Image (tube, rainbow, N blue to C red; front, side, top):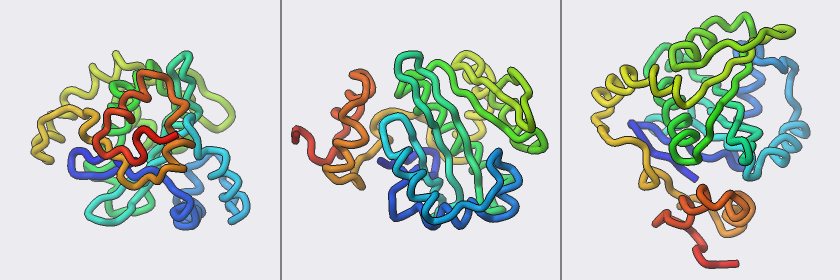
Length: 223
């Protein structure tokens, strides 16, 4: 699954990507912004990927100008209550204070709220990560509670729409892309039949229709 919008691509995480992600995730300047701050072994990374490679978790590599610069995700998707937890980290410091993480967040949130019809996105931010806290507040998150070392934040569709309008106008100017995210921006060209069956066939009907209607669907109609 690949989402192409506003000049970036979000590429769904695959097994062949996880060693690169592990190495980036173990960088000291990334670790200290995470709730889990220990080094991650190859074995642990493989177990983790096996646990998240399903319909309840969406991990995407952020690709810009042909290279992977970070990871954005929605995890623990609850399709009954339409809630999930979001997160993002960029290992390429060159893009930290640019519009790229903003675009990645908007594309992910647009997909969650307007394509998959989620009602609430939560986030857990390390208390000392002031940059991430400010970033989330700017796009509509609200602080709900503080726990041992981290802050729990909530983002509703209503608050997101209120906050994002002005930001989106700036992104439209930069990217020259005036249309909102739609199914035409989502492709399954990189998925084989096995992946399609594992990751998409058990989705709720309204979300599954997005897959079925994609012109790039691989293995459409196969059992």
